[in-house]
Length: 368
Image (cartoon, rainbow, N blue to C red; front, side, top):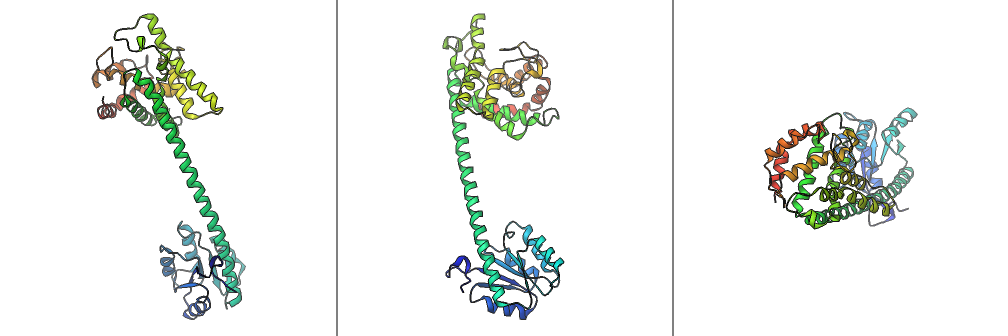
């Protein structure tokens, strides 16, 4: 009978035999060396050292009663280590006590062989466990491959999503004489503010890492509705008339509707699209209800839009536009602070002011 690993005579499995008795090590080694590669250890510490090497044994035959560190302790340490937990352990024992066997199985052993060792039983048990191990290894490798493929596909979808968002946002922003730096600043401001705001117990449960990431990705679409506004209004160098401003205000509804229609085409709910709709629709609402398009008050305004409101105003104030020069960082802080409780959520204003240095650094790094 051939006892080679995976049924291949060219690929011998490695068996680690652990026993403190030289006679037992010699006897078992002689039996096994015709069929397998054999390594030996006369104590638990040495056994662990061999098992932890890069080239690991395929099966470990482990004596229970040994000085210093018994077989149970060796087995426990092997099973606790991710690198060795899947190596089958067969206990060698002179005891027939059922309680001892139960303890070994609880620790993760796969079998028991009693001493004195029967050669046919020893070879049959090892062969059986090697075939089980090869099947388990195959399944683990297959699962690992599938997990890697799923991860790669997920990363690919996310990359396509990110590029699509950036492209759409760029179309809107370039019509308003803005650049990619505006989009990047906006994203970084939003993430900076959300992470800092998370420290406030009032927002901790809402601003999860996943939500902050969604908010970060959605931010560039806040003004996507500007694609529907005439250049005569969007690029007007002077103040808008009342009628023109009413038209300008519709960019919130245009953006919301465009994203909602795209979402309906998917026929599923997508977190970043839902967040994008909120931001596009509500980011011009004001805390006291004087904003547009709905005149929402206080916490009726989604948290995503309340964060975006401050970010959008800060970037607008500190950026040069066709109708105005850029204000300084400190001037922008004063204006936003004056809007606390009227234009902006008071809690978010406080966090924004605490994060002012970080905002200034982002503005300087990504200035036009």
